[in-house]
Length: 217
Image (cartoon, rainbow, N blue to C red; front, top):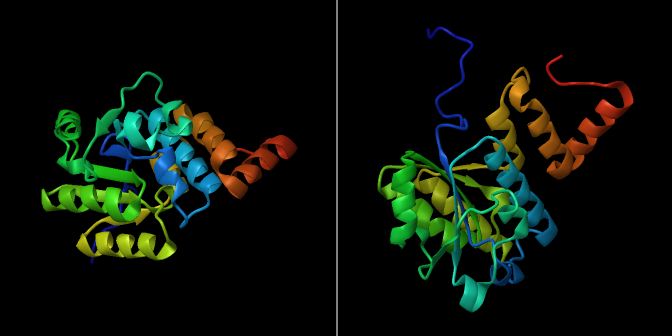
């Protein structure tokens, strides 16, 4: 029988054990996205971006044909990473772009988290390619979208069958925090949740305002 210890499992994400790649959160891609409401998509993209920036997760921002066709990346994302250059591509599969791969190798993490548009093309491509090259892959499912619910779900299933691990935007934030006793990031995490965490964020605001509640106390 194994012995239980108060330590986190190796499958969990923490700020130091992965890189985040945000792909093609651009106007042209969003126009045809129908698997998720555009407001919810932008909100979740903002939540993930603020979490990664706040916890200093190495993050790659990449676009496709930004100037000639697809338009700029969502401001909700770029505002979280002021001054960070955008890696623009011609390839639909991010993993086939030499500039992106050079940055992946420079960061040097074997665990990659993906989010972006569209799930069935611009997320499936790099996810399957990274898995094929021995990387661990996570996909933030509700920070991705596609032209239909069917396209999104079949893409997720395909990646899961290949070994990718799905998660959600709020899960990503809370997994990076993971312990409310970590006071150094407590205010940041609850601040992000209050702004982008939906009903959970409203609950935090209510509890703090009405009776000064605080997780971990």
